[in-house]
Length: 280
Length: 314
Image 1 (cartoon, rainbow over the protein chains, first blue to last red):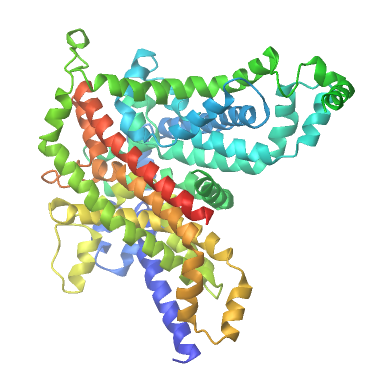
Image 2: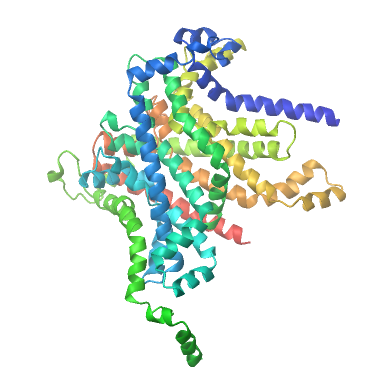
């Protein structure tokens, strides 16, 4: 085989695969710009992957779904939940990681062992008793019900512990000699030095909260508390269902994640490969 | 030695005042540690440890959420009825079907894609973005989107099949096809992310190894078999373990796409836990499911950790 034929073959295969992977996303976005009837009539032709010819029509399905449902509220809910989880998760997990990495206290070894052991508990299977606890706490239908359970994660505590252990102790000792408290060292020295760990844990927490579905479905029964993911299935089950409007809400829900992946992709790979190989 | 230590302590007067010695941890330092841990201990306690213990306890009762006062201790009765529970058995069979197919398909695809885009040529960035694009959609979005694409009467996929002369397929409305459709959609969604991790692994293989083998006369195929794949082993094991554990937790795709049907052909154990515990409010029975299935996943995880741990220590 000559070099040229391999190159052509390579691109042929790559493009075929690229189409297989990207066509649903393209179809979703372009269908959200069309009239309902146009989606069906374009289905058999290549036009299924082209947006509406009239640019002024593009936002019509969006306007319609915004008038039928309180999309702004769902969007605001999702942003609020995800932002709170992200900030909470960075603070709570890094505090614990800092204690495990630098503070000496009784029972540290046992607590750390329990933390590592708890990594094997599959969270999804205990959702029923988790729901019972949440109900007993009286926080059903409040933001706390979706935010609180997500702000502490054994895996992220472990990641912060490993990260803090690697930071040189000299700076901390110097600060301690000058009388700085542990809390001050954490806030003024350790956190500013751990931007990579913060970016990884923050990004993973945001995505996890944004995509969370079953837990919010269980604890939020009032529709005004729904995050987007729950709202999507609710809209998809509320008659009359219009395909273009459903595609519009799917697109709205995806845009923030595209931005997150574009800006934080690097930290995601680092996070997963480091966390996975480290834990035994 | 003791005196030297003493002198050392004397020099760091500040530390000594705080009682920061190696042997005796002071009350203050103890408290500092606990204070830092307190938020995470409260959250993990409430939403992980207590629910886990409660599941163990409730699994031995007939707790029904609407009549909590009538709850009785019934020993292992829940587990006995579980063993003969048709839906539970079906859900276990289904999830194993999912696991057995998704592992080679998704991980194999991810590896293939990574090898395709590893050497940067013209167009690699576009290909990478395309392969990764399903990852940016949440599982709910992916499930709803494919629900429309796979619609037996008006979906895009059947339109495409028919233009190629293939008869329209029932897809999700067929008990024989539904699980395979879910396997395909899940692999399609997840492969791009694992491709990135494989790529990171590929970039860790030093270029000199390839150069040396080229001088020794190895061709591309021999390099793949003898260098690339063996050196990717840690990455592959990591991906295989995470995929396996995640696959056992399959729930959103069947919940949104098929509601476990048709004929329970896509009912999974986690979905069954949700139905009995949340929809039917049978906390006792659902807890028994949790203990049984959660226990199974924990055992798998521990075996895998041992396996992977030993392997990366080589």
